[in-house]
Image (cartoon, rainbow, N blue to C red):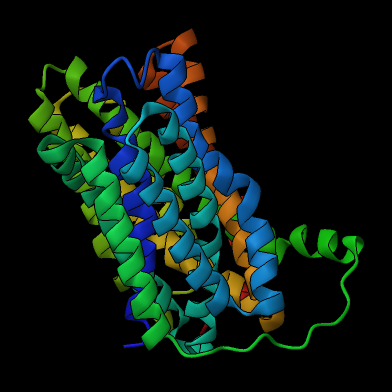
Length: 380
């Protein structure tokens, strides 16, 4: 029971990110006047996460992850409620920024608690399950968010998010045990720099960033490819759903395989990067069959990497520094989330979209050789 509120917290941050983002473009001109304004609104949530996740991760190590988790969830509920109460376009900016800041607190805190509340031999399964419910949030966000907005507008959507975050906060208060912070030795800036430049941190973090970049590009650009092949919105939406569903289903299985000794972090991350690279090669080929194969391969690749990457980070991090590590690793994922689409778009603007896919596939293939965790982190 103690893990379920953490899974719900993962769902909440993913749902909060995508439910609003997927519906912003349909708002009236009074709220979103231009593509630039739309882009700025979309960037508020992720921008706050990029800046604040490492900070709140460090605070989790200092005062305990549970208080940061609870405060973040309560803050998310409060931020969401501001738009419910005001229901004015200007307050949408305040609510969205507040949501991003609050998610920056409870997201790394939840990851830290997943690691602290499970023995290292079960980290793969724990992070796989956490990733599964987070993927469900990413998948369901646009669908449920769009339906809620259709029923009652953005005020109803933010009301739902207020109730969701408050309910998860109460659940966590009742079910998540107190995990006191561990004694820490004094850390200088140089010590921190050494730790985050250590290959034991950099390799799994870079692999997580690569997986997130692949997922973001797949979700954002496969519909464009499908449309150019003459497919309708239902068919392209099905391809994206296949990608997200495959990622969600594969994560728990990947984590269980790691815990059972059937898969090592080194081999698993290499396989995941290879699957994602093959997926983008298929995406560059014409036809709906290759589009669907690409979606499945990209989803499978990201699903394999994500729990293994987090398990590798947890294995290489002193327990008293888990919050800082998870927060900084989440920063890497956010950079991948933004950098992947920017790279593909830049190449596509010079050549064609298929060339962007191929470039990303090549980079993922190169990462197959250099981003695997060191052998000392492998489980045998």
